[in-house]
Amino acid sequence: MIREGITHSLSGLLQRLVELQCYTSEERFRKLLQRSPHILQLVPHRYLANYLGIDPTNFSKLLNKVRI
Image 1 (cartoon, rainbow, N blue to C red):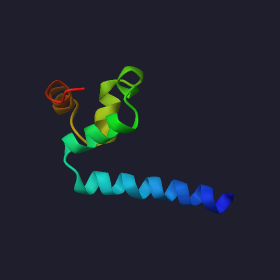
Image 2: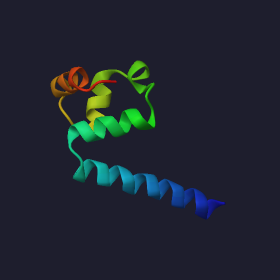
Image 3: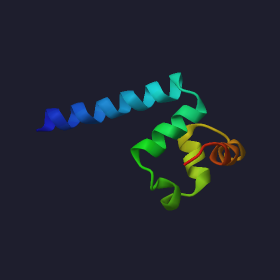
């Protein structure tokens, strides 16, 4: 069970690294909304922008640009 838990954790970590390095900010935002669409109501936008690795002002522009 411990090995499966560690494998699952590392898999998520590697997926996160691939997203940060290979995807555009819009693609990262869409993936985040795909994984957890309710996150916009729970977490302040500045923290989400930091998680996605973009500036908060660009995040607000992206939020207006992407249809939810």
